[in-house]
Amino acid sequence: MKILFLHPNFPAQFRHLAVALAKNNHHQVVFGTKRREGALSGVNKVLYAPSRQARPETHHYVRPLENAVLEGQAVYRMAEKLKSQGFIPDIVYGHSGWGPTLFIKDAFPKATLLCYFEWFYHAHGSDADFDPSEELNADDEARIRTKNAPILLDLYGCDRGLSPTYWQRQQFPPEFHSKLNVCHDGINTEFFQPQPGAKLVLPRINLDLSQVEELITYVARGMEPYRGFPQFIETIGILQQRRPHCHAVIVGENRVAYGKNLPDGKTYKELMLEKVPLDLERVHFTGLLPYSEYLQVLQASSVHVYLTRPFVLSWSMLESLGAGCLVVASNTAPVTEVIQDGINGLLVDFFSPQEIAERVEEALDHPNRMEQIRAKARETIQENYNLAQLLPQHLQWVEQAVEN
Image 1 (cartoon, rainbow, N blue to C red):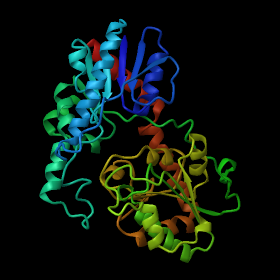
Image 2: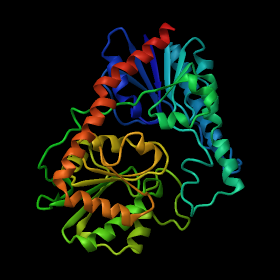
Image 3: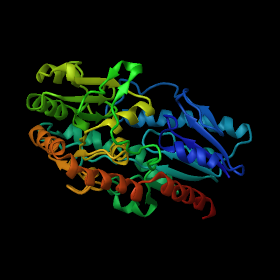
Image 4: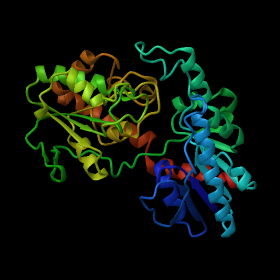
Protein backbone atom coordinates (compact mmCIF):
# COMPACT_ATOMS: atom_id res chain seq x y z
CA MET A 1 0.00 0.00 0.00
CA LYS A 2 1.16 3.50 -0.81
CA ILE A 3 0.07 6.19 1.63
CA LEU A 4 0.53 9.96 1.55
CA PHE A 5 0.19 11.92 4.79
CA LEU A 6 -0.52 15.64 4.62
CA HIS A 7 0.00 18.10 7.47
CA PRO A 8 1.58 21.58 7.46
CA ASN A 9 3.41 20.60 10.64
CA PHE A 10 5.51 17.43 10.95
CA PRO A 11 4.78 14.81 12.14
CA ALA A 12 1.95 16.13 14.36
CA GLN A 13 -0.89 13.65 14.95
CA PHE A 14 0.53 11.19 12.42
CA ARG A 15 3.84 10.46 14.17
CA HIS A 16 3.08 6.97 15.51
CA LEU A 17 0.86 5.93 12.60
CA ALA A 18 3.38 6.90 9.92
CA VAL A 19 6.22 5.07 11.69
CA ALA A 20 4.09 1.94 12.21
CA LEU A 21 3.08 1.83 8.55
CA ALA A 22 6.66 2.44 7.41
CA LYS A 23 7.86 -0.59 9.38
CA ASN A 24 5.87 -2.81 7.02
CA ASN A 25 7.91 -3.48 3.90
CA HIS A 26 4.71 -3.77 1.87
CA HIS A 27 3.94 -0.10 2.49
CA GLN A 28 5.50 3.01 1.00
CA VAL A 29 4.99 6.07 3.19
CA VAL A 30 5.36 9.68 2.02
CA PHE A 31 4.66 12.72 4.22
CA GLY A 32 3.87 16.09 2.64
CA THR A 33 4.52 19.05 4.93
CA LYS A 34 5.74 22.64 5.14
CA ARG A 35 8.06 21.91 8.09
CA ARG A 36 11.69 21.33 7.14
CA GLU A 37 12.82 20.12 10.57
CA GLY A 38 12.50 16.54 11.71
CA ALA A 39 12.59 13.05 10.23
CA LEU A 40 10.89 9.70 10.81
CA SER A 41 12.43 6.31 10.15
CA GLY A 42 11.23 4.84 6.85
CA VAL A 43 9.12 7.91 5.98
CA ASN A 44 9.96 9.95 2.89
CA LYS A 45 9.28 13.60 3.70
CA VAL A 46 8.46 15.97 0.83
CA LEU A 47 8.00 19.71 1.20
CA TYR A 48 5.43 22.07 -0.22
CA ALA A 49 5.17 25.84 0.13
CA PRO A 50 2.20 28.09 -0.71
CA SER A 51 3.10 30.74 -3.28
CA ARG A 52 1.85 33.56 -1.02
CA GLN A 53 -0.44 34.40 1.89
CA ALA A 54 -3.99 35.73 1.66
CA ARG A 55 -3.94 39.32 0.48
CA PRO A 56 -4.73 42.09 3.01
CA GLU A 57 -7.49 43.44 0.76
CA THR A 58 -9.32 40.08 0.85
CA HIS A 59 -12.45 40.28 2.97
CA HIS A 60 -11.44 39.20 6.46
CA TYR A 61 -14.15 36.50 6.60
CA VAL A 62 -12.56 34.87 3.56
CA ARG A 63 -8.85 35.11 4.40
CA PRO A 64 -8.73 31.67 6.13
CA LEU A 65 -10.36 30.15 3.04
CA GLU A 66 -7.93 31.92 0.70
CA ASN A 67 -5.00 30.63 2.74
CA ALA A 68 -6.51 27.12 2.65
CA VAL A 69 -6.87 27.33 -1.13
CA LEU A 70 -3.25 28.46 -1.47
CA GLU A 71 -2.18 25.58 0.76
CA GLY A 72 -4.23 23.12 -1.28
CA GLN A 73 -2.77 24.52 -4.50
CA ALA A 74 0.78 24.02 -3.18
CA VAL A 75 -0.05 20.43 -2.21
CA TYR A 76 -1.54 19.81 -5.66
CA ARG A 77 1.72 20.94 -7.27
CA MET A 78 3.66 18.69 -4.91
CA ALA A 79 1.33 15.83 -5.86
CA GLU A 80 2.01 16.40 -9.55
CA LYS A 81 5.74 16.05 -8.87
CA LEU A 82 5.14 12.83 -6.93
CA LYS A 83 3.03 11.51 -9.79
CA SER A 84 5.82 12.28 -12.29
CA GLN A 85 8.18 10.26 -10.08
CA GLY A 86 5.81 7.27 -10.15
CA PHE A 87 4.25 7.68 -6.70
CA ILE A 88 0.46 7.35 -6.84
CA PRO A 89 -1.01 6.73 -3.38
CA ASP A 90 -3.75 4.27 -2.52
CA ILE A 91 -4.58 6.39 0.53
CA VAL A 92 -4.16 10.07 1.32
CA TYR A 93 -4.56 10.92 5.01
CA GLY A 94 -4.51 14.62 5.86
CA HIS A 95 -5.42 17.10 8.55
CA SER A 96 -8.51 19.10 7.64
CA GLY A 97 -8.87 22.82 8.17
CA TRP A 98 -5.70 24.37 6.77
CA GLY A 99 -6.35 23.20 3.23
CA PRO A 100 -3.77 20.53 2.29
CA THR A 101 -6.47 18.01 1.37
CA LEU A 102 -8.73 20.35 -0.66
CA PHE A 103 -7.63 19.37 -4.17
CA ILE A 104 -5.94 16.03 -3.56
CA LYS A 105 -8.84 14.10 -5.10
CA ASP A 106 -8.23 16.06 -8.29
CA ALA A 107 -4.55 15.05 -8.27
CA PHE A 108 -5.21 11.44 -7.26
CA PRO A 109 -8.85 10.65 -8.17
CA LYS A 110 -8.55 6.92 -7.40
CA ALA A 111 -7.01 7.41 -3.93
CA THR A 112 -9.09 6.96 -0.80
CA LEU A 113 -9.13 10.25 1.12
CA LEU A 114 -9.05 10.10 4.92
CA CYS A 115 -9.26 13.32 6.91
CA TYR A 116 -8.39 14.05 10.53
CA PHE A 117 -11.14 16.39 11.77
CA GLU A 118 -10.08 18.21 14.91
CA TRP A 119 -12.56 21.07 15.22
CA PHE A 120 -15.68 22.62 13.70
CA TYR A 121 -16.33 26.25 14.58
CA HIS A 122 -19.47 27.57 16.25
CA ALA A 123 -20.26 31.12 17.33
CA HIS A 124 -22.40 29.78 20.17
CA GLY A 125 -22.25 26.79 22.49
CA SER A 126 -18.52 26.04 22.60
CA ASP A 127 -15.36 28.14 22.76
CA ALA A 128 -16.27 31.42 21.06
CA ASP A 129 -18.96 32.63 23.48
CA PHE A 130 -17.66 30.83 26.58
CA ASP A 131 -16.26 33.93 28.25
CA PRO A 132 -19.19 36.27 29.07
CA SER A 133 -16.80 39.25 29.07
CA GLU A 134 -16.08 38.71 25.36
CA GLU A 135 -19.33 39.53 23.60
CA LEU A 136 -19.76 38.40 20.01
CA ASN A 137 -21.23 40.70 17.40
CA ALA A 138 -22.74 39.96 13.98
CA ASP A 139 -19.31 40.37 12.39
CA ASP A 140 -17.85 37.68 14.67
CA GLU A 141 -20.72 35.30 13.94
CA ALA A 142 -20.33 35.67 10.18
CA ARG A 143 -16.54 35.29 10.37
CA ILE A 144 -16.82 32.11 12.46
CA ARG A 145 -19.45 30.62 10.13
CA THR A 146 -17.27 31.27 7.08
CA LYS A 147 -14.20 29.78 8.79
CA ASN A 148 -15.75 26.33 8.33
CA ALA A 149 -15.68 26.55 4.52
CA PRO A 150 -12.51 24.44 3.93
CA ILE A 151 -13.62 21.96 6.59
CA LEU A 152 -17.02 21.54 4.93
CA LEU A 153 -15.30 20.92 1.58
CA ASP A 154 -13.27 18.17 3.25
CA LEU A 155 -16.32 16.69 4.97
CA TYR A 156 -17.99 16.46 1.58
CA GLY A 157 -14.93 15.24 -0.31
CA CYS A 158 -13.39 12.70 2.05
CA ASP A 159 -14.21 8.99 2.08
CA ARG A 160 -13.80 8.69 5.84
CA GLY A 161 -12.95 10.98 8.71
CA LEU A 162 -11.62 10.65 12.22
CA SER A 163 -11.94 12.80 15.35
CA PRO A 164 -9.84 12.25 18.49
CA THR A 165 -12.65 12.60 21.07
CA TYR A 166 -16.44 12.25 21.14
CA TRP A 167 -16.77 15.88 22.25
CA GLN A 168 -14.83 17.04 19.19
CA ARG A 169 -16.86 14.88 16.82
CA GLN A 170 -20.03 16.29 18.38
CA GLN A 171 -19.09 19.75 17.05
CA PHE A 172 -19.44 18.62 13.43
CA PRO A 173 -22.76 18.75 11.59
CA PRO A 174 -24.84 15.64 12.44
CA GLU A 175 -25.38 14.81 8.77
CA PHE A 176 -21.64 13.99 8.52
CA HIS A 177 -21.35 11.91 11.71
CA SER A 178 -21.75 8.65 9.79
CA LYS A 179 -18.44 9.46 8.10
CA LEU A 180 -16.60 10.22 11.35
CA ASN A 181 -14.96 7.60 13.51
CA VAL A 182 -13.62 8.43 17.00
CA CYS A 183 -10.11 7.29 17.87
CA HIS A 184 -7.56 9.22 19.88
CA ASP A 185 -3.95 9.38 18.66
CA GLY A 186 -2.96 7.55 21.86
CA ILE A 187 -0.67 8.22 24.79
CA ASN A 188 2.57 6.26 25.19
CA THR A 189 2.04 4.96 28.72
CA GLU A 190 5.46 3.31 28.70
CA PHE A 191 6.99 6.78 28.41
CA PHE A 192 4.42 8.77 30.38
CA GLN A 193 4.48 6.91 33.65
CA PRO A 194 4.84 7.93 37.31
CA GLN A 195 8.14 8.10 39.14
CA PRO A 196 7.32 8.27 42.86
CA GLY A 197 9.49 10.68 44.79
CA ALA A 198 10.81 12.39 41.65
CA LYS A 199 12.35 15.86 42.11
CA LEU A 200 12.71 18.40 39.34
CA VAL A 201 16.27 19.19 38.27
CA LEU A 202 16.84 20.47 34.72
CA PRO A 203 20.54 21.40 34.37
CA ARG A 204 20.12 22.57 30.78
CA ILE A 205 18.08 25.57 31.94
CA ASN A 206 19.72 25.87 35.38
CA LEU A 207 16.57 24.84 37.22
CA ASP A 208 17.04 22.95 40.48
CA LEU A 209 13.87 22.46 42.53
CA SER A 210 15.10 19.36 44.33
CA GLN A 211 14.37 20.96 47.73
CA VAL A 212 10.81 22.00 46.83
CA GLU A 213 8.03 20.03 48.52
CA GLU A 214 5.02 21.69 46.84
CA LEU A 215 5.30 21.97 43.07
CA ILE A 216 2.35 23.20 41.00
CA THR A 217 2.72 22.63 37.28
CA TYR A 218 1.02 24.08 34.20
CA VAL A 219 1.60 23.14 30.55
CA ALA A 220 0.24 24.73 27.35
CA ARG A 221 1.54 25.62 23.89
CA GLY A 222 0.98 29.32 24.62
CA MET A 223 0.03 31.59 27.50
CA GLU A 224 -3.51 32.58 26.60
CA PRO A 225 -7.13 32.79 27.78
CA TYR A 226 -8.18 29.67 25.82
CA ARG A 227 -6.09 27.56 28.19
CA GLY A 228 -6.88 29.60 31.31
CA PHE A 229 -3.47 31.22 31.70
CA PRO A 230 -4.85 34.42 33.32
CA GLN A 231 -6.81 32.37 35.86
CA PHE A 232 -3.77 30.23 36.59
CA ILE A 233 -1.60 33.28 37.35
CA GLU A 234 -4.30 34.63 39.67
CA THR A 235 -4.44 31.20 41.34
CA ILE A 236 -0.68 31.27 41.94
CA GLY A 237 -1.04 34.74 43.44
CA ILE A 238 -3.55 33.38 45.96
CA LEU A 239 -1.50 30.28 46.73
CA GLN A 240 1.74 32.22 47.26
CA GLN A 241 0.06 34.23 50.01
CA ARG A 242 -1.22 31.10 51.72
CA ARG A 243 1.67 28.72 51.16
CA PRO A 244 5.11 30.30 51.51
CA HIS A 245 6.95 27.24 50.21
CA CYS A 246 4.97 26.40 47.07
CA HIS A 247 6.58 26.83 43.65
CA ALA A 248 5.01 26.92 40.18
CA VAL A 249 6.52 25.67 36.93
CA ILE A 250 4.97 26.94 33.68
CA VAL A 251 5.86 25.11 30.47
CA GLY A 252 5.05 26.79 27.14
CA GLU A 253 5.82 29.74 24.91
CA ASN A 254 4.99 33.37 25.61
CA ARG A 255 2.56 33.61 22.71
CA VAL A 256 -1.06 33.02 21.70
CA ALA A 257 -1.62 29.66 20.02
CA TYR A 258 -5.44 29.91 20.04
CA GLY A 259 -7.68 32.96 20.14
CA LYS A 260 -6.88 36.64 19.83
CA ASN A 261 -3.78 38.63 20.73
CA LEU A 262 -4.14 41.64 22.99
CA PRO A 263 -4.85 44.81 20.97
CA ASP A 264 -1.99 46.79 22.55
CA GLY A 265 0.67 44.26 21.53
CA LYS A 266 1.33 43.02 25.06
CA THR A 267 1.53 39.32 25.78
CA TYR A 268 -0.77 37.74 28.35
CA LYS A 269 2.31 36.94 30.42
CA GLU A 270 3.21 40.63 30.56
CA LEU A 271 -0.38 41.61 31.31
CA MET A 272 -0.82 39.12 34.16
CA LEU A 273 2.56 39.77 35.77
CA GLU A 274 1.64 43.47 35.87
CA LYS A 275 -1.78 42.66 37.30
CA VAL A 276 -0.86 40.00 39.89
CA PRO A 277 2.03 40.62 42.32
CA LEU A 278 4.03 37.39 42.42
CA ASP A 279 7.21 36.25 44.10
CA LEU A 280 8.99 35.43 40.85
CA GLU A 281 11.64 33.48 42.78
CA ARG A 282 8.91 30.86 43.14
CA VAL A 283 7.54 30.98 39.58
CA HIS A 284 9.60 29.29 36.88
CA PHE A 285 8.90 29.83 33.16
CA THR A 286 10.72 27.11 31.24
CA GLY A 287 9.66 27.85 27.66
CA LEU A 288 9.09 24.80 25.48
CA LEU A 289 10.89 21.68 26.73
CA PRO A 290 12.17 18.52 25.05
CA TYR A 291 9.95 15.54 25.83
CA SER A 292 12.39 14.07 28.34
CA GLU A 293 12.44 17.28 30.41
CA TYR A 294 8.70 17.80 30.05
CA LEU A 295 8.19 14.30 31.46
CA GLN A 296 10.36 15.20 34.46
CA VAL A 297 8.11 18.20 35.15
CA LEU A 298 5.04 15.97 35.20
CA GLN A 299 6.71 13.29 37.33
CA ALA A 300 7.80 15.84 39.94
CA SER A 301 4.44 17.62 40.02
CA SER A 302 2.54 17.82 43.32
CA VAL A 303 -0.54 19.21 41.54
CA HIS A 304 -0.97 19.74 37.81
CA VAL A 305 -3.46 22.43 36.72
CA TYR A 306 -5.17 22.09 33.32
CA LEU A 307 -7.71 24.69 32.23
CA THR A 308 -9.45 24.94 28.88
CA ARG A 309 -12.41 26.53 27.22
CA PRO A 310 -14.81 24.09 25.49
CA PHE A 311 -12.31 23.48 22.70
CA VAL A 312 -9.83 20.87 21.44
CA LEU A 313 -8.57 18.68 24.30
CA SER A 314 -4.80 19.03 24.82
CA TRP A 315 -2.51 16.03 24.64
CA SER A 316 -0.83 17.43 27.75
CA MET A 317 -3.86 16.72 29.93
CA LEU A 318 -3.89 13.06 28.94
CA GLU A 319 -0.10 12.83 29.26
CA SER A 320 -0.24 14.29 32.76
CA LEU A 321 -2.88 11.73 33.77
CA GLY A 322 -0.72 8.98 32.27
CA ALA A 323 2.23 10.20 34.35
CA GLY A 324 0.11 9.83 37.47
CA CYS A 325 -0.35 13.54 38.11
CA LEU A 326 -2.97 14.84 40.50
CA VAL A 327 -4.84 16.95 37.95
CA VAL A 328 -7.00 19.93 38.91
CA ALA A 329 -8.92 20.69 35.72
CA SER A 330 -11.68 22.94 34.45
CA ASN A 331 -15.21 21.54 34.55
CA THR A 332 -15.62 21.96 30.79
CA ALA A 333 -16.95 19.51 28.21
CA PRO A 334 -13.65 18.28 26.67
CA VAL A 335 -12.30 17.58 30.16
CA THR A 336 -15.37 15.85 31.58
CA GLU A 337 -15.23 13.27 28.78
CA VAL A 338 -12.10 12.03 30.60
CA ILE A 339 -12.09 13.24 34.23
CA GLN A 340 -14.68 12.48 36.91
CA ASP A 341 -14.47 14.75 39.93
CA GLY A 342 -12.93 13.01 42.92
CA ILE A 343 -12.34 9.80 40.95
CA ASN A 344 -9.39 10.45 38.61
CA GLY A 345 -8.95 14.21 39.11
CA LEU A 346 -10.48 17.31 40.67
CA LEU A 347 -12.80 19.61 38.67
CA VAL A 348 -13.09 23.36 39.12
CA ASP A 349 -14.88 26.40 37.74
CA PHE A 350 -12.70 27.70 34.89
CA PHE A 351 -13.39 31.31 35.89
CA SER A 352 -12.71 30.99 39.64
CA PRO A 353 -9.05 31.33 40.71
CA GLN A 354 -10.34 31.14 44.30
CA GLU A 355 -11.89 27.70 43.72
CA ILE A 356 -8.87 26.51 41.74
CA ALA A 357 -6.60 27.55 44.63
CA GLU A 358 -8.84 25.81 47.18
CA ARG A 359 -8.78 22.53 45.26
CA VAL A 360 -5.01 22.75 44.76
CA GLU A 361 -4.71 23.18 48.53
CA GLU A 362 -7.07 20.25 49.09
CA ALA A 363 -4.72 18.12 46.99
CA LEU A 364 -1.59 19.41 48.75
CA ASP A 365 -3.09 18.92 52.22
CA HIS A 366 -4.27 15.34 51.66
CA PRO A 367 -1.52 13.56 49.70
CA ASN A 368 -2.51 10.11 50.97
CA ARG A 369 -6.13 10.49 49.87
CA MET A 370 -4.90 11.77 46.51
CA GLU A 371 -2.82 8.65 45.84
CA GLN A 372 -5.96 6.76 44.89
CA ILE A 373 -6.96 9.52 42.47
CA ARG A 374 -3.48 9.53 40.93
CA ALA A 375 -3.64 5.76 40.43
CA LYS A 376 -7.08 6.05 38.83
CA ALA A 377 -5.81 8.85 36.57
CA ARG A 378 -3.15 6.57 35.11
CA GLU A 379 -5.61 3.68 34.91
CA THR A 380 -7.95 5.87 32.83
CA ILE A 381 -5.23 6.48 30.26
CA GLN A 382 -4.08 2.86 30.25
CA GLU A 383 -7.61 1.62 29.65
CA ASN A 384 -8.99 4.24 27.24
CA TYR A 385 -6.14 6.23 25.65
CA ASN A 386 -3.25 3.80 25.54
CA LEU A 387 -1.19 4.05 22.36
CA ALA A 388 -0.49 0.30 22.50
CA GLN A 389 -4.22 -0.37 22.14
CA LEU A 390 -5.29 2.53 19.96
CA LEU A 391 -2.52 2.38 17.34
CA PRO A 392 -3.58 -1.08 16.08
CA GLN A 393 -7.18 0.17 15.88
CA HIS A 394 -6.03 3.24 13.95
CA LEU A 395 -3.98 1.08 11.59
CA GLN A 396 -6.92 -1.23 11.02
CA TRP A 397 -9.18 1.74 10.24
CA VAL A 398 -6.67 3.00 7.64
CA GLU A 399 -6.14 -0.39 6.03
CA GLN A 400 -9.88 -1.12 5.88
CA ALA A 401 -10.33 2.08 3.88
CA VAL A 402 -8.47 0.46 0.97
CA GLU A 403 -10.32 -2.84 1.30
CA ASN A 404 -13.67 -1.07 1.13
